[in-house]
Length: 372
Image (cartoon, rainbow, N blue to C red; front, side, top):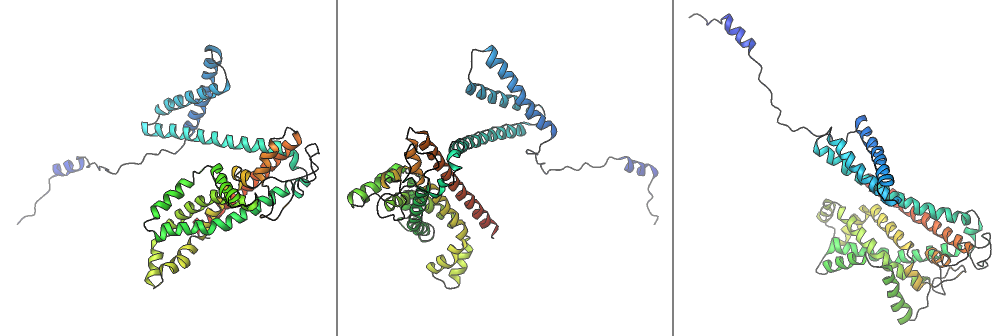
């Protein structure tokens, strides 16, 4: 039987036939956050173009004036112009992403600018007092409103702040972590009620905490205004912060660790004490620092419960004990420029202490994420 032959025409037809198209059904990702030189120039051009347009219309054509209206109009025109320029070169999704990103960055920059202005104004006004060494090493017992800044300092307020915060930490740390353990590890019928109360206390006005301690401890129980009463008022403000933060931290602990501990025969208390709490220890330290940062700057509670004095005192149970917020409040009411300089100096020291606490909290939180 003869083998079939392939004609020359069929070979040419097969070679000339078009190759089948490969259809790629996989959707392509849109590059939203990539920036090119054209994108940067579009943003800069929109800013400058909006500035020129608003200056011509707002200051020269329309009967309007004022810096606030000018900057608001400038920002609105910039957003519209930036949206139009971006829409000419990119699809709608990219345009929306760029506009929202510009708005978010603008508001974040505005908040940061406000914070810098507050800190900068306080530091500049307090620099006159901070340059003197005696401001950190003496109290105001020998300083009057007419004495120069070379006399007197904030030592008594700094010591009072540290003593009151230490007492508040001793009170709130076991209570806050115990509340978090009950809510996350134990539970029960009252867990929902306790969680609701804790969440409501996070928004409690500080003056209410001061009035509560003033009524129950100072007036009804007969205690005098002292550092201990102020520490109790600060504890009321710190407790919900620590309890709420600690509860969130305990939720992050993997459930497999609890199951492994229970499978090895440990009780629930041993699991919490030896497994859950050691695992969450760095994050619990962050919760504690956040609570301290909240309590250390409170003025209303200590104003009602601590009393005011210009003398250095280490005894929180006997006599008034002043803190940095209370000293700032009292001296800022004085008409004398020297007392006002001391007030801004005390406020600057308080800002530095709070800033240091938040930096420590960030470092501890970062180490807890990396497991170091």
